[in-house]
Length: 224
Image 1 (cartoon, rainbow, N blue to C red):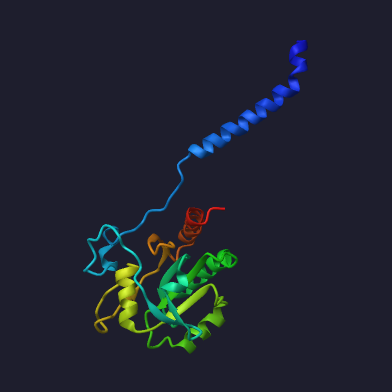
Image 2 (spheres, one colour; image 1 turned 90 degrees about the horizontal axis):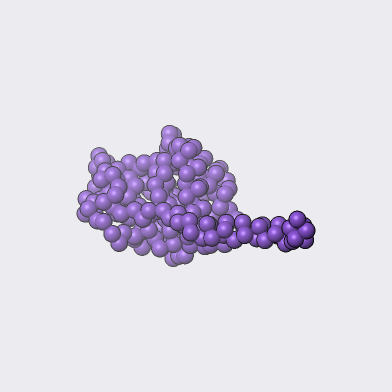
């Protein structure tokens, strides 16, 4: 009893240190959660250009050059080394775009202080969505220029990006050779220009999932 009393404090400290060490080992042995890398063959064929529908590897977002709400040319270089969320919309859309914009504003609020994450919205009606129209839309919705680019440009280029890179819009061909119907998808892109997630931009729960998986991707590329 005298020996136990003598070493009681030492044994208590030893027990605490042992628990901490065991917890560290346990955490170190846990598998690190990683998001999938999406390939065209994994996506609904309606959203993918027929030339790449069966591609199973090496898919990346192609180079691009578009004009943002400030009349500035935006290319893939502006997103070099960045994570970003992309979508397709048009400013006069009376239905799902309203909800999508509201939900991307929630994402903007979460990432506004993180220099490694950005947003990119492509107009599917570029002839209507001029630079002035995009700027008006940005101001009306509280879009932060440094975090979120609204882009317009040649319709063929946007069409090809949508269906060959982001795998995100349906081709109905009713209004010309590059007619497209945008979906509600938000697309999560990593710094290596690979697709890491698709989310329904009109569904609150899906937006919450996007924010959770965005954190996983941040830890993968920018561990604290």
